[in-house]
Length: 106
Image 1 (cartoon, one colour):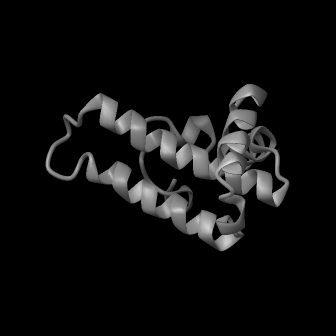
Image 2: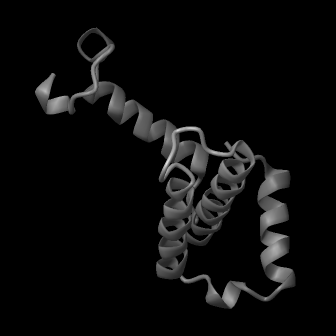
Protein backbone atom coordinates (compact mmCIF):
# COMPACT_ATOMS: atom_id res chain seq x y z
CA UNK A 1 0.00 0.00 0.00
CA UNK A 2 2.50 2.64 1.13
CA UNK A 3 6.10 1.58 0.66
CA UNK A 4 8.76 1.90 3.34
CA UNK A 5 10.44 4.84 1.62
CA UNK A 6 7.20 6.85 1.63
CA UNK A 7 6.41 5.88 5.22
CA UNK A 8 9.91 6.95 6.31
CA UNK A 9 9.63 10.26 4.44
CA UNK A 10 6.35 10.99 6.26
CA UNK A 11 7.95 10.17 9.62
CA UNK A 12 10.98 12.34 8.94
CA UNK A 13 8.86 15.26 7.75
CA UNK A 14 6.88 15.21 10.99
CA UNK A 15 9.89 14.60 13.24
CA UNK A 16 11.93 17.42 11.70
CA UNK A 17 9.14 19.85 12.54
CA UNK A 18 8.52 18.33 16.00
CA UNK A 19 4.88 17.79 15.10
CA UNK A 20 4.64 14.35 16.72
CA UNK A 21 3.64 16.06 19.96
CA UNK A 22 0.37 17.07 18.27
CA UNK A 23 -0.31 13.64 16.79
CA UNK A 24 -2.53 11.95 19.34
CA UNK A 25 -4.80 9.20 18.04
CA UNK A 26 -7.78 11.55 18.27
CA UNK A 27 -6.02 14.45 16.54
CA UNK A 28 -4.91 12.22 13.67
CA UNK A 29 -8.41 10.76 13.28
CA UNK A 30 -9.85 14.29 13.23
CA UNK A 31 -7.27 15.31 10.64
CA UNK A 32 -8.23 12.39 8.41
CA UNK A 33 -11.85 13.51 8.53
CA UNK A 34 -10.98 17.15 7.92
CA UNK A 35 -8.79 16.31 4.93
CA UNK A 36 -11.47 13.94 3.58
CA UNK A 37 -13.88 16.87 3.75
CA UNK A 38 -11.42 18.98 1.76
CA UNK A 39 -11.20 16.16 -0.80
CA UNK A 40 -14.98 16.11 -1.05
CA UNK A 41 -14.99 19.88 -1.44
CA UNK A 42 -13.14 19.42 -4.73
CA UNK A 43 -16.37 17.87 -6.06
CA UNK A 44 -18.80 20.24 -4.31
CA UNK A 45 -20.11 21.99 -7.41
CA UNK A 46 -18.86 19.77 -10.22
CA UNK A 47 -17.98 16.19 -10.98
CA UNK A 48 -15.08 17.51 -13.07
CA UNK A 49 -12.73 18.41 -10.23
CA UNK A 50 -9.21 19.62 -10.86
CA UNK A 51 -7.06 16.45 -10.86
CA UNK A 52 -4.08 18.21 -9.25
CA UNK A 53 -6.17 19.52 -6.37
CA UNK A 54 -7.81 16.11 -5.91
CA UNK A 55 -4.38 14.44 -5.81
CA UNK A 56 -3.13 16.93 -3.24
CA UNK A 57 -6.10 16.39 -0.93
CA UNK A 58 -5.91 12.62 -1.39
CA UNK A 59 -2.23 12.77 -0.42
CA UNK A 60 -3.18 14.65 2.76
CA UNK A 61 -5.76 11.98 3.68
CA UNK A 62 -3.28 9.18 3.06
CA UNK A 63 -0.52 10.93 4.98
CA UNK A 64 -2.68 11.20 8.08
CA UNK A 65 -3.79 7.57 7.65
CA UNK A 66 -0.13 6.47 7.58
CA UNK A 67 0.66 8.55 10.67
CA UNK A 68 -2.29 7.08 12.57
CA UNK A 69 -1.44 3.53 11.52
CA UNK A 70 2.14 4.04 12.69
CA UNK A 71 0.96 5.47 16.00
CA UNK A 72 -1.41 2.53 16.53
CA UNK A 73 1.19 0.01 15.41
CA UNK A 74 -1.00 -1.47 12.70
CA UNK A 75 0.12 -2.74 9.32
CA UNK A 76 -1.90 -0.93 6.65
CA UNK A 77 -1.53 -3.72 4.11
CA UNK A 78 -2.66 -6.32 6.63
CA UNK A 79 -5.73 -4.42 7.81
CA UNK A 80 -6.83 -3.59 4.25
CA UNK A 81 -6.43 -7.20 3.11
CA UNK A 82 -8.26 -8.42 6.23
CA UNK A 83 -11.12 -5.99 5.57
CA UNK A 84 -11.30 -7.14 1.94
CA UNK A 85 -11.67 -10.76 3.12
CA UNK A 86 -14.50 -9.73 5.46
CA UNK A 87 -16.19 -7.70 2.72
CA UNK A 88 -15.83 -10.55 0.23
CA UNK A 89 -17.81 -12.77 2.59
CA UNK A 90 -20.51 -10.10 2.96
CA UNK A 91 -20.62 -9.35 -0.76
CA UNK A 92 -20.26 -12.62 -2.72
CA UNK A 93 -19.53 -11.93 -6.37
CA UNK A 94 -22.51 -13.94 -7.61
CA UNK A 95 -24.94 -11.80 -5.57
CA UNK A 96 -23.20 -8.41 -5.47
CA UNK A 97 -21.87 -7.95 -9.01
CA UNK A 98 -23.28 -4.76 -10.51
CA UNK A 99 -25.33 -3.87 -7.43
CA UNK A 100 -24.87 -1.00 -5.00
CA UNK A 101 -27.10 -2.24 -2.18
CA UNK A 102 -25.89 -3.04 1.29
CA UNK A 103 -25.00 -6.67 2.00
CA UNK A 104 -28.19 -7.31 3.99
CA UNK A 105 -30.28 -6.40 0.93
CA UNK A 106 -28.54 -8.78 -1.50
